[in-house]
Length: 259
Image (cartoon, rainbow, N blue to C red; front, side, top):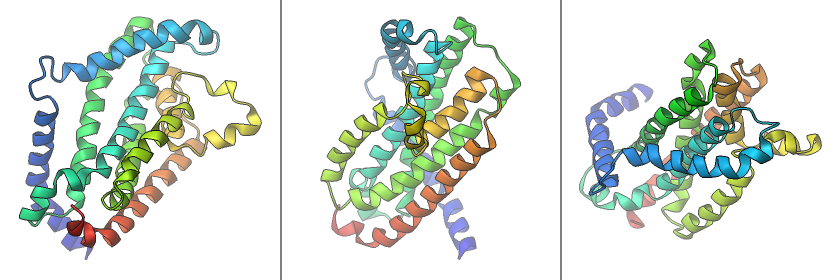
């Protein structure tokens, strides 16, 4: 069974490549700056946020522009990828009805597209870090680790939300509200130290906080993340992916009736 799925994945890999290219071109169609927006948009927002909050948190957060940039970059990828996955069956209804394609490919292509967009935003992040004097350490070579955690988690939760979002169209609006609340519960622009110790366990239930902490440990703090953080991140990623796959597989036979 596993071998058959691997062969199926390899057979449709060229199609996955074409879907990602199609969505990438569609996203920047008729855009003058194109891909540059993926780099300029967070950069301009970082300038505004830094002006507003750097004075408030300058004593507790060194290298504040890089601190905010990393949080916004990772949060935008995870939540944006999940929300896009939720509608991937609906947006690709014509292809699903015409061709025999594994449905999960549309979720996978959506997450890959958002991941590529995040990689583009890493370019100005590195430039900003260099400009403000963030010390470059060998730990930065481990940057793919938190990005991989975030990718697997986003794909898993995206498939789970897609399994229900295809039937419940209002779920998209609900997630928009959840996304806003989620943003304030993630230390993107504020330090975790302002949260009382007795309540910090609630923040540790937030997967993005875990991935973000590992990311900042490696890139800004120049230290190795704790084993505890790495274990929690691994569990979050694997459990969410398994849950997403199982739920998606259970619901996918009914997708055709709702798209």
